[in-house]
Structures are given as C-alpha cells and as structure tokens.
Amino acid sequence: MSVHTEDTIVALATAPGIAAISVIRLSGKEAIGITQKCFKGKDLLSQATHTLHFGTLHDNGRTIDEVLVALFREPNSFTKENSVEISCHGSPFIVKEIIKTLLKNGARLAEPGEFTKRAFFHGRFDLAQAEAVADLIHAETDNARQAALNQMRGGFSKEIDRLREELIHFASLIELELDFGEEDVEFAQRDDLRNLITRIRSVLRALIDSFDQGNVIKNGVPTVIAGKPNAGKSTLLNTLLNEERAIVSDIPGTTRDAIEDEIVLGGINFRFIDTAGLRETNDVIEAIGVERTRDRMKKASLIIYLFDLANTTLEEIETQRQELAALGIPHINVGNKLDKADPLLLEKLKTEDFTFISAAAHTNVGVLKEKLLAKVQVREVKTGDVMVTNLRHYQNLLQTYDSLGRVLDGMSQGVTGDFLAMDIRQSLHYLGEITGAITTDDLLDNIFSKFCIGK
Image (cartoon, helix red, strand yellow):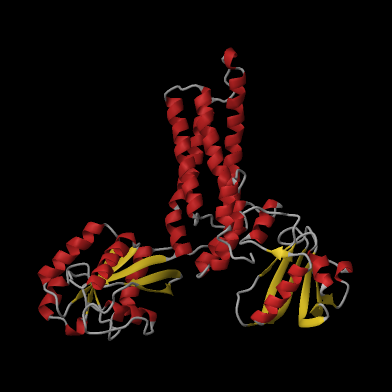
C-alpha cells in the first residue's frame, strides 16, 4: 500500500449502517477546498482551525443534507495534514451521496489504515503507537483499553528507543575500531559492553515475559468446552452466556460444529467454544466434527472438560483424564449433572481436582467461573504500565534478545570486532522495526492493511 501524500483522501469514519449521525473524514492538502466546493454556509477557506460550521452539502444544486463541518488545519490534526470531519445524518444513502460528491470534487477513497499511516509518515507517532490506535479501537475490556492507551501514549516506545540509543553508542565505537583495524585499538571497552548487553537483555526478558499476560488482555482466552456426547457442553455454554446460544438435546451428537461466543469475567475476555462430543462414530458428518474438536483442543489456551457424572464410570473418567493430560493444555476437570450423580462416584472423586456442577440447574457455576479466573490470573493494567500485547513486537524482542546473546558468546570466545558489530547491527534492526525506525513497504502494508478504512 503506497501513500500518495499529495492526494486528498475521504472515508466514512464511523461504523457503516443506519445511525443517528455518521462522520465522514477528509485529509490532505485540498481537504478544506474540496469540502468548500459543495458546502453552503460560511466560507471554510477563511475559517480558523478547530472550528465547527453548520451548513448544507450540495451536488449540482441538489441539497443532500444538513451537516456540521469540523476544520483542522495542518499541522494541528491527527494526520498533520489539513483535515475535515463532516457530521451528517446516519443514513447509508446520505453517506454514499456525500462521499460520491466529494470524489467528484477531487478527493479519492482512502485505503485501509491510510489516515493513521499518514500520521505515522508525518511524525505524529511511531509505528508501535500507530498499532496501538487499532488496538484501542478493538479493545473489549478495561484492561485492553488501558494497555492500548499506555502504548499509544508512547510508554513502550520510549523503553525501546532508550535501549536502542544505548546500543547505537557502543555500535558506533566498534565500527570506529574497524576503521583503525591495522592499529589494534579498542574504543569500546569490552567489560562495559558486556555489562550493557546483560542489562539490556534483562529489560528485554521482562518485556518478553509480559507477553503472556499482554496477549490474554488483548486477545482474550480461547476456551474449549469438550467432553463425551451428552455431557452437557451446550447446556454449560448457554448457562455461562445466560442465553440459548446452542441447541440442547438428549440425542447424542447434536453439536456437529464449533459454536463460539464471548463473555467478560473479571476484566478478561473468555471466548468459549462449544464442540462436538468426543466418541467413535460411523456418521461421516459427526466424525468431521469430532476431528475438529480434537484440533480445537490442541490450539486452545484453556479446556473445560465435562464428565457426565450420571452416566460415566470411574474407569472411563480415568481414561479420559489421561488422554486430556497427554495434550499438555491447561484444563479444568468439571463433573456435570451433580443432581443426578451416583453418591459413591462423587465420594471417590472428592479427593481429585474436580469442580462439581449442574449446568442445567446453574449449581456451582459461580465456582467454575472462579476457577477460570484462577487459571488465567491477569493483573490489573495501570496507567504507565509497559506491557507487550503485540505478537510482532514479541517476535522482534525475542530476535533482539537472541542477537545480543550471540554478542556475549562472541566476546567470551574472543571473536573480532567485525563479528560483534554484525550481531549488534542485527539487534538494532530488530528493535528499529518495532517503532518504525527501520521499515519496509511490505511491513507497513501488512500492518496498515488490517486497519479499518476510516482510520
């Protein structure tokens, strides 16, 4: 995705569909002039920045709508370009007509993420902060909102820039040594370099380790509800969601494909996935569902495994538990149909790690929710906390950590400065990619193409 900064772009900034109002954004050198061509009211070209103006928009003398126009003159706008935001009535037809008229007068449709991409190119913020804009838009919990806000305000970027600046200082000294190679001089003291890299790797390790929580905060917890047919998986999903989301039937094999929905517990977004019952079957369609269940379980962050206490022997439970443990995925053993359970079976399972519920009667479902939260254990995100929530950042931090590890190994083995410089340059490259100090068109295209059109 290229950016033609001489163009003036336009897009709907609010969600599509019928609404009380919609907001249409323009950005570019001619944003105000293009709007003026179809606006009746004050002369927008002579108005100050950060002002609102009521009037009507027209197309060849035909009035389209009454609107409120907000002006933002460069560089005091989101993109640091001349920008206009037009608030109109939220009819999809009106929105389409206004955008069509603006296109006739010289604007072009914005590409996904192009407003934010222009802001990045004009130095409004760095790449990590730009990605945080998208995270903030998609935040579904207060923790996710605060984590994105902290990153957008530059806390994470400042930490990365500080580490990079310290590395650049020593890299320049080693590069200087290479220029005087024949004179065998050492500008970069090796003990100082070793101490610096050890300290930087310590900071990187803390950032890397924060990703486990950061990923949960941003993306939630994919939680598979699994078990044999008729164990009560669909009933449990409906109970957790407090709505009839899945079909419940006494006929085994009713659920043939995964059903997903989300709820927020304790500030954490859990994505529950109801799956087909695990059993051997000759039904081709059900067998596909069972295979998908097994795949989902392997990819899950957490598994709620239901055992049917009314129709399962202790031996069958032990076999299922062994199969579950072999997956190596965090899981909660849940005995369902507590109200119909054999008292002897309950007595034998009491000493095991089981949560006993009745999904149909809502018995002990609150206890199960507490167990879910205990399995995840995410702390509250506070203002100023530096946390990694982005997989791209996590991968770059790992690569930086490994590159600096090679520098330490090289110094221990007495390698020459040119090899040390090579690994340090690689470290600087990975760190620079996080904030956009080093970028490629492919990287930028990949990041901004995931944004919505009007952002």
